[in-house]
Image (cartoon, rainbow, N blue to C red; front, side):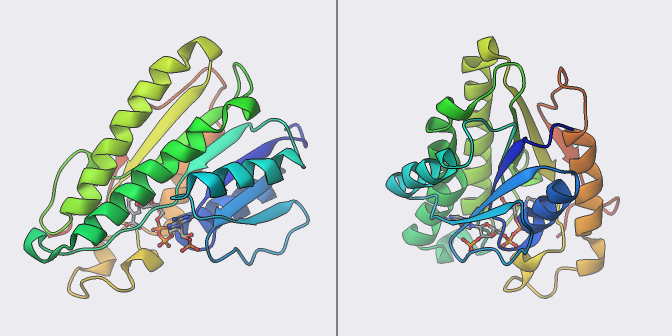
Length: 228
Ligand SMILES: NC(=O)c1ccc[n+]([C@@H]2O[C@H](COP(=O)([O-])OP(=O)(O)OC[C@H]3O[C@@H](n4cnc5c(N)ncnc54)[C@H](OP(=O)(O)O)[C@@H]3O)[C@@H](O)[C@H]2O)c1
């Protein structure tokens, strides 16, 4: 691959974002990783940016920093997200709003200000959505609402940027055992979740696909089905 290719990934300090960053670095990309805590990934081609994607001004500053390194992004991975489980009657308005602000508005900020970095007929936007964008499950009303909304926004932007030849792929996995589950219901069987390796299997297929292909919605989950 062209060794000057840059990938922007949100949410690299943990879980799937960290794994994707490592993989893309091994593949020869320059990787820009974004998170609030910072990413401890020691690689000469990794650029760590602290940014809360909920804040539009912070995202604009992030792009100013990126402009010091490159004027084009081959890959944009919208991955940063939060997940908290609770019955709707116990979900605070703040918790509900935080899900929308991170999982939807955060990705909106990233795309809204990406225009100057898009490469016609090349940039690939990969969205880490969820199976919860297809089916509501008990105790995740805030998360599910945010992921349904995320998919809707992406469908709209895909249409808007069709004339630029920007491709969009939306991954909708079931449960994957990452730190996201650390604080959540211990009764849910971890051995019925996918592993990060399983996720990477699909991610690798998506990012190595021919430049004319896109995956508007790709759903994958453990054969045991949805967690109950
Ligand atoms: N694990 C699953 O079962 C599963 C299944 C389907 C979909 N997904 C989706 O996969 C994505 C990654 O999840 P994960 O399992 O890897 O979770 P994770 O380990 O909790 O990682 C989430 C990442 O998002 C970042 N993040 C959260 N809020 C942010 C903000 N306001 N600004 C910048 N970065 C922010 C976090 O960094 P900081 O805290 O440092 O900001 C962290 O790096 C999420 O969108 C999630 O919804 C996960």
